[in-house]
Length: 463
Image (cartoon, rainbow, N blue to C red; front, side):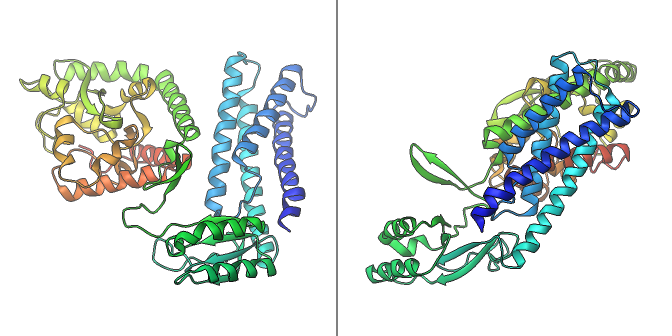
């Protein structure tokens, strides 16, 4: 049944998705140009580009597949990443071809229409396939060798859940495995039909594990191995290779993969460029004048902060404090007193800027040049970083990625300077969680939460 699914349904799903994209293009054109469906030459070329790029992104991210062992959240995340790449490619094409011919109304309608319809179709398709699996179809027959794995809550993982697309045919416990057990195992899998073997207790098989895997593969089974739980592992791990030998990374980091870093960096460049070109230049002039009126000194305050891999960089902000004898050391070297809510050094315009987060606006320059990201752990001052390293376990994990203008810890209220170890620990935990669970939709969620907090003046701990 699985082979039939791959041969017939997957190409059908791909064609349906592509047809929706093409129909959305024509419908947007029809609405924008008042009933015309005859594309002119420039729009015909754009349509050809759309077909090629959507096909490539769909194939690369496998948006038309309902992959076994993956949840709805995973599938929708792949869809959103493919859409981000697709839409970005369209904008790059328009800029590269100086596409003044493309109507903004058409472009907005087309992109919105195809995203909404495809999203709904993917949801419907997922639930239809789950319903189909509940009837005993489109599943993989699974033989489990060892105890059933547990989820993060300590409960036995329900592998037979239709979401995963597996059905456990047999589950064998592994105790004192011997040559006789290997012989009985071979006899068993030659008599019954299985699609895959899941080994959950590899250490208990000892030296027999190679024989077990060879027997399974000789009988046409795909083999999966789950390592026994180790408390030093994070909830998610990844497999890498040391030369040609597989190794387990103790901590899962999505941003170690090149395609994820390219996606994040592309968004950083696009978002920072839009903000700088549309907002920052004139806000800099207005805010700069107000800063000069409030107190003497520079408009931009730069301070050494700690970035990715503990590298120092100059972080830019609008100056919100008065000059004093310690200002140079505080600004240039990143050493000084942590700002508090009643800090008398903060100017009247500085209080407004801090309450609205507008003092961070110059950091879009940091983002554009590449030493910061839109979303990530907030960068700390050098002195603060040195103090925290020795006090908070695993603190330096947060420096595995670029620091951000906003972040998961920041939107949850763990922001600003503090000497409270509990708050520092909570902030670090939120940053590590973000590193292990990064995906493009999470970044979008954090950006939208940040904007909402700014426009509603509900930024937590902003002072």
